[in-house]
Image 1: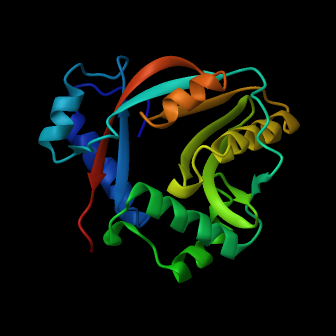
Image 2 (image 1 turned 90 degrees about the vertical axis):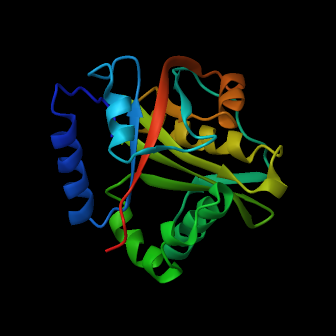
Length: 215
């Protein structure tokens, strides 16, 4: 949930969002608040309603890139996933890197079945080194560019350019579509890397998480 501009009706609006999540079988929701969010005490109200701050994933930099980033290393193959198995492997890598608990994960069969539907929710990209999937990221396209999310690199492959290659792959696809901008919400691990790639910070977000009980 972004662009939070509520009046005095925060509880009612939260209830609407939670109802939408239940209808679409979504158990985990993220609320992105910034200095432009209203009312001024919206974060306090959401915390009182049961949303939580996730340690290490609370203060998020809103960043923008409008110039060509450097290319990734030649040994890294970075591209959109092409098959249901690649999609499922990419999502499982995200789960592992982010330490997602078991009740936050979908099964391999569920992920494979989700592949066809995922096209309407942005593109998933992978980075391979010597045939091994080592990093993953997503892109949500708009006419002007894309929003990046979910960047994750396996611990044993960090420092080898996979993250950089994923940024460049998504940039190249944006340019091919006629756009020229990348936007990302960056945590403490990715923010320094993105600055080195040419991103500038334009906003400071506070991320709250809402986890609905299992049905």
